[in-house]
Image (cartoon, rainbow, N blue to C red):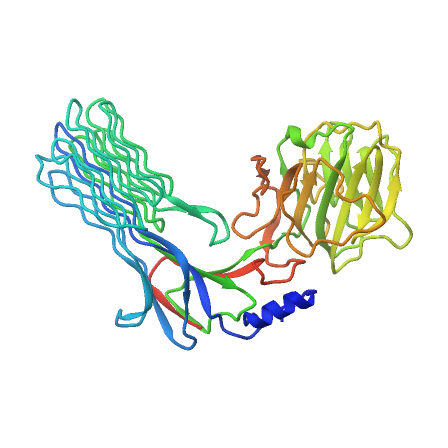
Length: 514
């Protein structure tokens, strides 16, 4: 079993599912994105259609331990050259084939269709994972996509300025061209299978002729259409379609595809891989500080609670007993207007004039272990908790107003050098600020799973791999990048049960053996 505390139901569930350390997985989740289609070219008086995005598939599939499973990553299709030569579809991406390509329960994403040429009607758009957009002054129709993998391309505007249609995306159809602009490519689809939420398979924008602008590529790597210029390429390893050409120019090429698989790290790692996949752990990790570091966001009104109730909490692993500035808000020019905990003392309010809360005897923060620390204010009474137990209290802060709206992790005053900073290594994860008092009694059960957004959440930093600086709450302000930190897989939470996954990401073809 992985480390951590489990109740009987959790243990029995893990056992029944085979989630015991040292066993191979029985199935894996996958994301398979094919190569995007190339875009159409143009000649004087017309524009090319955007390339369709590569087909996108997600799901799960059973695997056979001890068998080498091959991965194929589809290449992007080539854009058509100026003058009317044909563009090409993107290449298919495949998971679960054997070395000869035969099925072992394989899953195939279809390459994106190419965009239509705006060149005397000689080259029509083509179907694929997503369909290519129609060219103008030639074919106007967009091509269909593959059911369950992508969507149709848009129609070219074969009148006035003759603008190209947008290529289809994994999420929506490509747009139809307008008289004054090339069409936008279809929107792709977003997934967090790799650890950070990322969009893939956006359609290429259609080209714009004369005074018309080119269409934007769809979110997920679609290339922009040119305006009397060459269309841009789809982004590599997204399956984005190429952007259509405007005027006498070439179409952009499609972006290559990608294959990602993921499964709980309660199962063992793969015994062998080829093709050099990137191997990471997704889920709750931690920020690792190794010198004087600061990790802050810009001011936000949701954090300026005035004299109201709040809860500030964080998990910390300290390696130095002299650490200060665990979790605080915020510098106001002359002192700190907020809350903090430093060794055996906590404060709330302006630390230049306010009365501190001395923690109870024996309540200093232990080193070399994970600790949960929380500061709560309820109707003017402030309580400090260490690992679920009340460690200090004061009623002195009823009138103290916190107005700065800043958060700092690892340094007492945001953006101020040498102010109670980390002086040795420390790990932090799952920092949350809520404008209600969550903990009010003598004790509570410390969360054993990553913290979630609850009513009143203003800030939640889950420290997941690939999205370390993201605020996970619905308040969309971002953290600023401080100094001397990195993401680390160290976490206070038991692995498995959806908390951490092994992630294998191929950007070129290869294989995996479990």
